[in-house]
Image 1 (cartoon, rainbow, N blue to C red):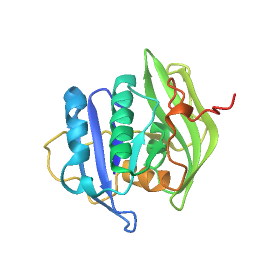
Image 2 (image 1 turned 90 degrees about the vertical axis):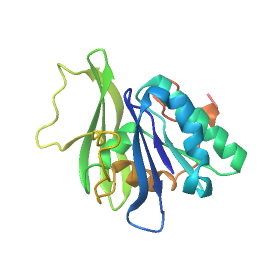
Image 3 (image 1 turned 45 degrees about the vertical axis):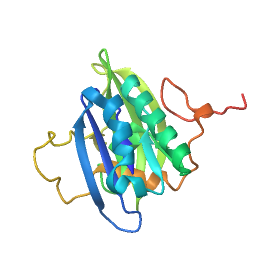
Length: 197
């Protein structure tokens, strides 16, 4: 199950069948009651049977990320299942089919988070680490494919499209890595840091 609460106004979740090419269930929820909705979401219906949880670790809304990471780590610990992290820019990069992509998302106060990736056959390689830059001075490289976190359909607007959402693709990728260890996440960026420093 993948959970993205990195946006200020909405939260997305998707229940992913890892052996299939599509996401089987998903929804977009308003983020206004995130602290109440997320724990309930993690314990109801088919989500109870999830074998792993994937949570977006940032960058994004610090409050949403903290609530989502805490809820997923708590649910994962209580149920004895691993919790994996995936970056918000990695989710955006999965919006583009195979190729090199510059992933961009708002950083607030006139800033942007920007990272460069190579997406191929369900895997993602980081070419340039995410950096925060000024949105007015940033220009993509010539011929660069730019991906932003796609806005989900409004809550209650009908069934999602049949195409897998980037969160579902990113969740499949995340479970190929090591599970999260809360002691090695940088709270500012959500990126893994070396805890031995």
